[in-house]
Image (cartoon, rainbow, N blue to C red; front, side):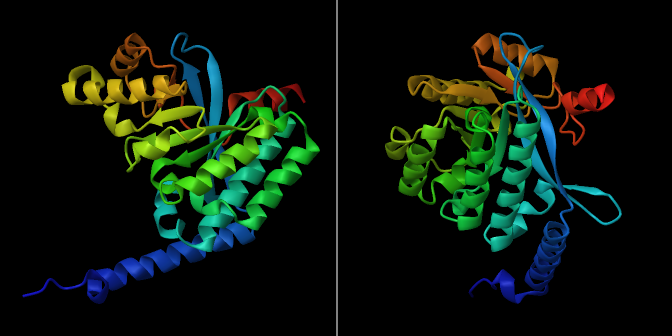
Length: 269
């Protein structure tokens, strides 16, 4: 007896309807510019008091003002044009923040699906044209899973944009399906080790072995290593002893739409 197809079941219908509502909500927020970046610090492993850069994480706001994180809508919109519009909005907000704050270095997320999306490229070129220093302070984060959809396209894309000084990070490293035959051809400047390998690393021998292996790959290809989802002092100290370059997680700061540097500028004004 064959298994029923989920899409034809009441559960499948409910999932589909929920995705439609999510896409409609995100589209309306984009149309009305109810979007913002939440900034999370990434600190140096050698000195966690020093911020290496920030990651700008896209947020959607309901008309009531409630902030909705990307994890609540990205799965529904990732493969749709709405996902490309989200990438455009994140980039536009990030470039504006870089222009406003000359000392800021900022990472912005994008899907490999946005490569070749003309509106995204127009946003980037406009931002680079307005401030010559922006490219050198911009990091584009591409998830491992989306990078492997079109590895040759990703390689050509990075090769083309690095002349502007833009850096690239491979996000969620270890969570996807990286084909290592492509890896040596990529031009990533850093790898961000997925949080599933970081949680409780100080007492999980499997995570220790896997994280060491991922760090070794990063070093071999001269990439900065970043540990994601660091939440405890014990995790941080273990990772620092391993020699990870940078640390990111709630231990060092939650994502905030009102970052410290913006609040300081507002007070001075």
